[in-house]
Image 1 (cartoon, rainbow, N blue to C red):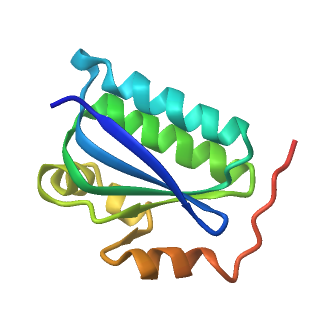
Image 2: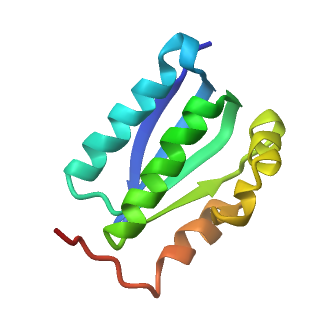
Length: 123
């Protein structure tokens, strides 16, 4: 199954529920990149990627996530991960990205982590 993305909001946090796999050969990484760019263009600065149902991610998909994280941080925003598991967790572990990305097992904890910090758009 290719990548499927569902978008929902909780307050001022935009949650992307990712399902399937994100690989370069299927073009899913470009789909993810395009979706994230559109959300950021619309003003989203707090993004939570729900990876619970993401079965696979390759370096292209990881590159999209890293680039988005860096861009958001430069703009005063943030990107956090929810429930990375299985192969996806292993990829983040091997690349030592679990040390960089805030990651949570519970959605309520992830959402609470965005509170208490001021996020703003810079130009």
